[in-house]
Amino acid sequence: MNTPYGELLLALRPEICLVAGALAVLAVDLPKNSRSPQQRLQISAALGVLALVTAGVWGLGAGQPGPLFGGVLSLDMLAQATRAGVLGLALLALGVTAGTSRLRHPAELVAMILFATTGFTLMAVAQQLLLAFLALETASLSLYVLAGFDKSRPESAEAALKYFLVGGVSAAFLLFGFSLLYGLTGSIELQEISVQLAMSGPSPLLVVALVMILVAFGFKAAAAPFHLWAPDVYEGAPAPSAALIASASKLAGLALFLRLLWPGLGAAAGNLTGAAGWLPVVALISAASMLLGNFAALAQGNVRRLLAYSAIAHAGALLLGVIAAGHSGPGPLFYYAATYGLATVGAFGVIAVVERAGRCQNLGDLGDLAGLRARSPLLAGCLFVFVLSLAGIPPLAGFVGKFVVFSAALQMGGPAGWLALLAIALSAVALYYYLLILKQALVAPAKESSPIKVPATAALALLAAAALIVVLGLWPSALLGLFQ
Image 1 (cartoon, rainbow, N blue to C red):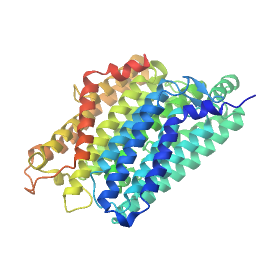
Image 2 (tube, one colour):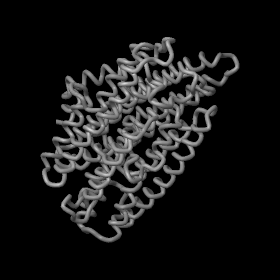
Image 3 (cartoon, rainbow, N blue to C red):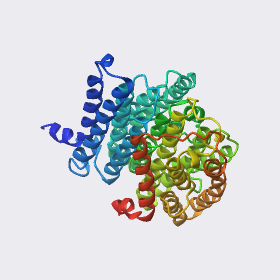
Image 4 (cartoon, helix red, strand yellow):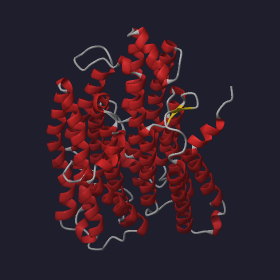
């Protein structure tokens, strides 16, 4: 039988573009001494943008929909939409990066963003346990480097070390769980695993495998009680790196998690009334994440840590979307994750520009945003859109994302409905601490009178993210219609 390598290369055109772009960035930057740091950054960012745009325009849509290469890859609508989403979020993060300062190795930073995005796009199409693990670790290793990229700050090195330790523990749990699944079913392909589990039924070994996998993804998603050092990573990592961690990695991870749980382990889902399976465990993690994330965010005086605990709360709401996906499909979850990523990358983009303009290398107290309206109306306006979208205020995309996910859960009824009501109630708590950010940026008097100069690339990225949030909020069918 002929192995369809041509079909494989056609399906992997986005990944080929990204890897080739990363290597080109490193090669062009070899004569470092002949260029200034700013010139190196501009050239590297331009090549990175070219690689991402080429991957999106030339790569997406390649290959036939459905399983490919013996079931290793899947080019369904979820895969293609997730690929496009992570490419767009990486492009915005790269635009914010080009507007930062104090970059000693700009080419390496751009290359790491492209390598991380390669892992994200592979996670979106993985239909096999081995490829899923390799894609996840490709992205994770790149993110560890990005978290510790600012060598002038010990907090960045601490963030990278903590992220690496948590990621290593997560990888060990995941690999152990995958190995147990292989032992139970004799296959690493999700479709065959689903068939074998449906035939064999529940077993103690399957319970152990499910626990290992859920713990691993709990660490990866920074969901309670596995959030551990996630706030420290958000606080210490460079702002563009934190933006990529909080946006594109979550979108790709949730797509992989959704594909693994429903098509692969759907036979072991159980039900929310307490029967053995992964559904009640995911529901408990979702509730714990929303409770801990929202109430812990109330006590934060540091804007980065506030956004970190906000991310934990949103992880809980996104897991509610994973539960509802078995009933309503992946559309609501994808919409919520994609629009949440836009708002998060935008918020960290504003932080990056404010850091660049200030004396400090890391935005600290909420008071550092005081008077942003007077110092930069552009940044204040964009932050207004991003924060209100995170809070779920209509008519922005964040409101629609929460509405479709919570509606899908309410339609399921039972415990899922009660979980949705809890999420709705906690949205009121979240509104309070989001308004604290806007109070500083729009109402509090400025500590400094000097205006903030926003680099053109950063301004373009922030305006694009804000515009997409408004447009997708007014026209949600642009994304939701893809899954109907």
